[in-house]
Image 1 (cartoon, rainbow, N blue to C red):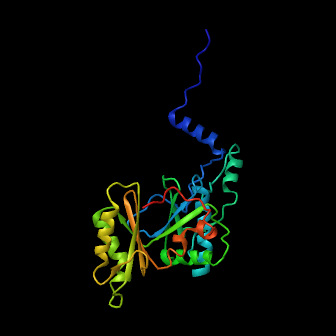
Image 2 (image 1 turned 120 degrees about the horizontal axis):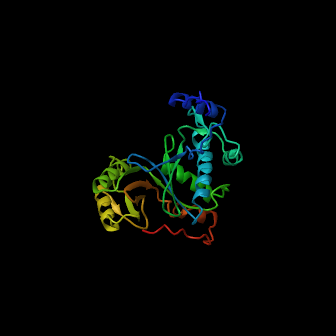
Image 3 (image 1 turned 180 degrees about the vertical axis):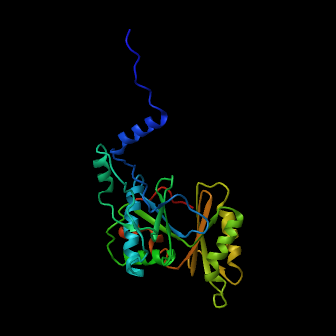
Length: 285
């Protein structure tokens, strides 16, 4: 009979140490993070810019708009001075099998501020894009300047598939209370000052993926918030109030009398004044 084996079984701690030693030399890798310049949702208190685009061109349009917006913001406000640069999507280490794939993902990416002036929000609606903005960007004047340049013949190097831009200067939850709060914040600088009496105004609404609000209800509420001393004029207005409702958020801004002259801030029509530009499917009041 063979002699009993003198080997003993390794205890839990020894097995653990052995596994750690084997894994010590193995490289770690991580899946590239989502672009750091993308936010999860639109929140009350945000301001920003809605954009529509050609169908199935949302990702391309987000990248193009970010480049265009940053280019114009640098011209209007100077270079972004926010400190702390991050390279979105970069992983710590790569395993040999995915190194080429990660390198491809990172190829062409450039450093962006940790707190960018324009942050895209991921939406689940076709042809629709939203960018949050931060100071010094003021959405209404920023979009107007961009469209004025396009109307004046400035060639936009980006945004081949981008269509309409809509600035938003106040956002709240899509409730009656939220509508009242947004109206007060957005309208006060334009209608409630002592030297602002007798303004002619019009209201245009866009309601997407929301069944709680009707166009008539929104218009009546906003018109009441404008207050006395002003007059509705749909064709020869001094100021145009834009109301955008999307799912559970609503936003508002006030633009000038050249809104229609600037093709309702539609970049595609400004680039193609002959009217051959394709209409995006999300628009409609």
